Length: 444
Image 1: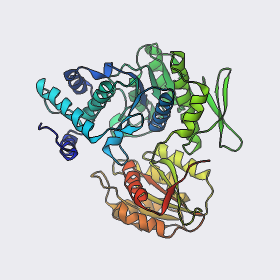
Image 2: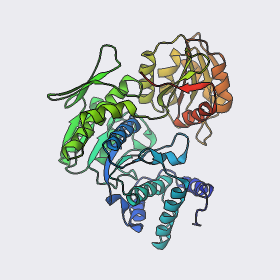
Image 3: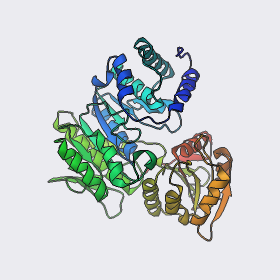
Image 4: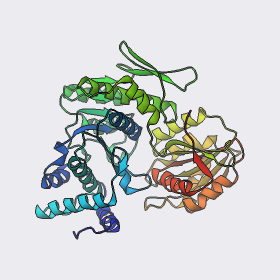
């Protein structure tokens, strides 16, 4: 491996590593981390697995830890618009200078220890994140798994708390074809005698998680059993409940009733940290929930010329996410729903489309700029059975071509939802940010 002098050099190398695909196991990541002194042992961590809500919960926890005066790293994947988004400290993305420094430090360790190639893209980026956080002296790092949990590259951590957000059918070619099989993989992050916070789960998934926790003597806090959220009559605010504790009139900046449930999971985690001496107070939690930002997930924009026209970005990349987005859309007021959608070829397209397309009057099929994207004409044909009789479908080869098509027929009171793969959402967000026609909407 040659030294990385530019971000383009690193990008080429990471693209090269993609040929190894998804190789599950911890042998490679452990060897790489050992070659640079096991940085993952140098910071306190919160480890998060699940199918939906991982990123939102991670962002809420990080915001609160920052507001409590702690330096906090955040490692998430995939990125939405920029590779540097994956590595954040106190919400600041890693600089290109630091990106290259830690990539080169990693390659020096790999070469010095004669570690053979065969490690994956995610092995390499995870080791970079741990090295970065350790070297920068973070107090905490919030770490999101990539895929699964048991054999995920991040599962070398010894975290303070494990968190498991809602589990749904996803990546069935790797994780298993049933909910309990997938739950077994996610449950692999549970550590011996380490507290685990469990978000809302289907009964079969919950049974697996509780059984694993019992085997490892891991104390559990379960949504709906040990803590909960009660929405107000208007749905705008909610109350967090935990035994005799009630935190009322809470509100999160993230859109949708599911985000209140994510917030409850984050609050339970934060209150557990408070018991260990972290100075997290009720007002810290209140303010953090109102300030948190997680781009591309239930993110609302309004038209500069006509504020009655709205746009939402949401990465509903699996059936569970599509169901959540469907419920969120139904809470909003609008005249007609326009949908711009791009789903990767290896996803359960039918399950995703069946949740979203029947509501739409105008649909624009697009293909994100990634090798796993389907042929857009074939994709559009696959969408046809899920369209309402009144709907029209448009085909665009790319997202830059598709966005003007999707936006041109918007009338006052209409809502455009851009969804599917996070790659679709990320490309669209680039366009929207550069446009003078759209303004990010802040929830009241």
